[in-house]
Amino acid sequence: MAQERYQPPASFTTPLAATLAEDLLERFLRYVRIDTQARRNRSGSPSSPGQLELGHLVVEELRAAGLLDAALDANGYVTATLATTTTAQSPVIGLIAHLDTSPDAPGAGVEPIVHRAYRGGIIELPLGGTRLDPATMPELTGKEGHDIVTASGDTLLGADDKVGVAAITTAVAHMAAHPELPRPTLRVAFTPDEEIGEGATLFDIEAFGALCAYTIDGSEVGELQDETFTAAQAILTIEGVDVHPGQAMGRLVSALRLAARIVAALPSDRLAPETTSGREGFIHPFELTGTPARATISTIVRDFDDDELERHLALLQRTAQDVIATEPRATLEFHVSRQYPNMRSFIEPVPYVTEAAEAAIRAEGIEPVRTAIRGGTDGSKLSERGLPTPNLFTGGHEYHSVREWASLQDMAAAAATIVRLAEVWTRPEFAAWAAPSGAADQSGATGASAVAGAAGASAVAGAAGATDAKPGTRLV
Image 1 (cartoon, helix red, strand yellow):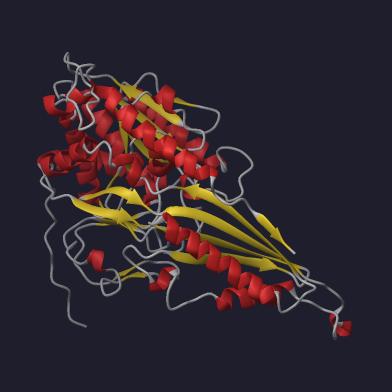
Image 2 (cartoon, helix red, strand yellow):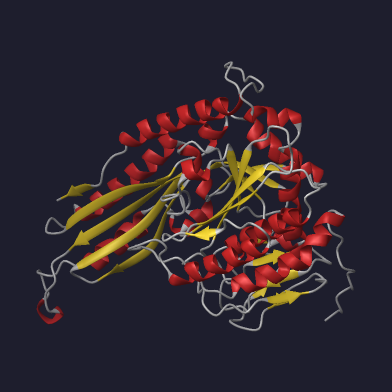
C-alpha cells in the first residue's frame, strides 16, 4: 500500500479562529464525554439526567467568563446574558444550541479522538470496525491538514450539537474578555431534547427578550439555513388476534405480520430517505415493534411543501388501510402528531436577520452557502412562535451515527463567526432595526415592531394552519 502523502496542518480561516481553536476544543472534549442522549416518549423535561449535568457545567463556565446571570432552570434550559459594549441603540440578539444528542445511535461512554493534521484517505477507528472513507463521505475530501475529531467507533461523537454549545461558550467567553470588541446585548440559551422535537416546547421567548436568534446547529462550513422540512410523526397501531401457534389454523391474525406487510408496501424507489434528496420529501418508518397480538409502526413524514406532506400522510394511511382490509378481524389506529413547521415563511418577512448572518460569515472570510435543512432545528418552532431563528454551521458531519466527525478548523470558524455576528449587529444599518425610529421595511413598519409584526403575523398564520391539522383517527 502506497504511503499517504504528508499534509501540513490546515490554516484557520482567520487569526481570530486560530485564537479560539484550542479553548473551543477543550470545551468540546469535556462536553462530549457527558451522556446527554435524549429519550423518546419523555415523561418530563429534560428526558435524560445527563442533559442537566451538562447544563450545570456550562452554567459554571459561563459564570466564570463573567455572565453572572447564567442559570439552569428545572426544565433543563440554560440562559445567560452578555451585556452590550456600545452606547448606541442596539438590539438584543439570541444564540442557541442544544444540549442533547440523538437517540439513533449509542451515546454513552464517548471517548473522543483528535486526529491531528489529517493526511487524507480512510480514518480507521479503533472500535466497531468503523471507517471514515472519503469515497463515501465526500465532505472529508479537502479536509487534508485539518484536525479531525471523532469518537472511537462504537458511539456517537456528539458534534450535533455540542459543537454548537462549545462554539457559543467559547465565543462569548472571548467577547467577555475583550470589551473593546463591539457587540449588542447577547442572550444565550441551551435547550434540552431538541433531537426529539421538544427543544422549543418550554422555551420562554418573552423572558429571552431577543429581537431574533441564531441556532448554531448546521454542518458544512459556511452554511446558512432559513428553511426546514415541515414535519409530522405518524404512529400506526395494529391489533390482531393471538392464539397458541399450535392451534392457530384459521384463527390467528398476526398483527406483526400485517405491520411488516405495511412497511414492505410503502414505495422504496421514492418517498424513502435513502432514495430522496434536495427538496424531495419522504416517509420513514424508524421503528417496528410488536407481537402477533399488537404491533406498532413509528414513522416520521417530511416535506418542504405542506400540501405534499399531506399527500404523503394520506398515502401512508391508505397503504395501511389496504393491508388491514385483507383481514377484517384486525383493526388499525392511525395517529398523526405535528412536530415542527418549515421556518421559511416566518423568516422571509424579516430578511435582514439572514442578511446579518451573511455579513458575519463573509467577515470571517467564508462565502455563505444558503441551503434548506433536510430536518429541523429549534428555530423551526421558535420562528413560528415569533422569534425569527435561522441556522448557522458548526463544522460537524455524519450526524446521528457512529461515524460522526468534526473539523477543528471549521468548528473554530463557527465560533469566530459568532464574534463577527455580534459586531455586525452593532453596524448602523442593522442596529437601526431595533431602534424605535429604525429603518422602515416595505410595509412601513419600523424597528423592533417590524420584526414583531412580520414574524408575529406569520406565527398567527402558522397557528391558524395548525388548527386545521387532522387529529389522530381510529379506524376499525
